[in-house]
Amino acid sequence: MNRTIKNTDYRFLPVLLGTDANCYGMARAFHEAYGITSLALGKFPLLETRKSRIVEVHTRPDFDQTEAFLASLDEVASLYKGFYDQLLLIACGDRYTELICENKARLEGRFVIPYIDQALKLQLENKADFYQMCEAHGLPYPATVIVSEETQDQIDLPFDFPVALKASNSIAWLEIDFPGKKKAFKVESRAELEDLVHKAYAAGYRDKLIIQDFIPGGDDAMYVLNSYSNAQGKVQMMCLGHCLLEDHTPAGVGNYNAIIQEANQDLYQTYQAFLEAIGFIGFSNFDLKYDARDGQYKVFEINIRQGRSSYFATASGCNLASWLVRDRVDNIQLETPHYHDNPHLWLHVPVDFFLGEAAESHLPQARRLINQGRVSNTLLYDQDLGLYRRLMINRFYHGQRKRMQV
Image (cartoon, rainbow, N blue to C red; front, side):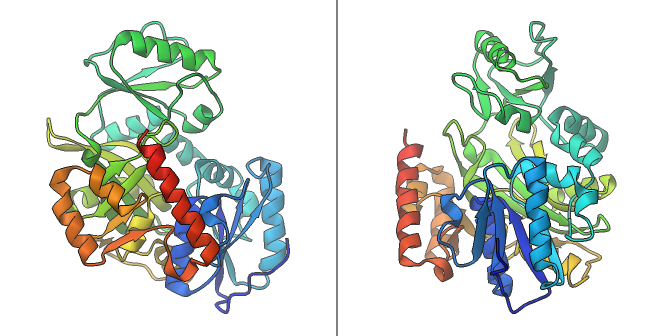
């Protein structure tokens, strides 16, 4: 690796961990706000950041292993620390947040690390512990039964089928495989549930499994809440998105493909209170679902980073990169958080595919936003679309259309 990024703004360099759409969304946010190029480190070169002029990518296959991770960051620090005043370390995947939190003491002093400590991270990212915290702080969540390897043959459900099934430990889940494996399941019967639970543990999963009351509703019952908390644990920004279309492919279940930004003061205030009560720092990302049976927004999980779809916030005028820079570079703090409210349509699928798949009730608003030019796609950035990249991205979306229709 050579020092080839020579931005004219010497105050900071974004160091992004990952090479996917999440990484590209953050690189685009930095470029839009400051006109700078970001550095990205990851395991493999992925299409989303390939042939880009706004992010320089360096990869090594073992980058998700501790020794290689630290060695790569040592190299980055030695190359760039004297050239830029601050190096902003930003994870774009769960494994990288884990590595940052585990090695925070080793990295501090050379990098700005807007992340919580390991102990709080473990509580929040383990869904069983997270739901205990929700209970303590009054956050609604779906009725839940927790299963372990030892209790897998003693499942007693206080709610009816269908149910949702997912791993409490999402990182450990990635490390196993079995026929029909998905990120999450909608399970229609006890026989199907028992079969999946047994397959998971037989494949080597050792943590808890979460069985939940399945909240009725389509893709448009889902919501995503993004937030940024400053170094003192005070929320600076909250931005809510209303999902209109999800990814239903086995590997992509739970990812969003269409979001309209909208505001909800009650949710903003509720989750601000939660984040400040637990002393959260940095970006957070909550997945929620509206339960029409009782009128509550019920939380599924928190990510201690921005999510793949979080560019929807930047697209709607709430630039994620600027909140980090305001806090850690410019030392600007708000006494009262910015509760974002500026409707904008974000897509990760072609416009015509979205219009053909989304619920009819939301199409009038979506069409108005499209006609007003208030529609964005993370990867379609006019300032970063050379001929090769334009062809590559268009081919990607054509292929994605086929995948979604299977």
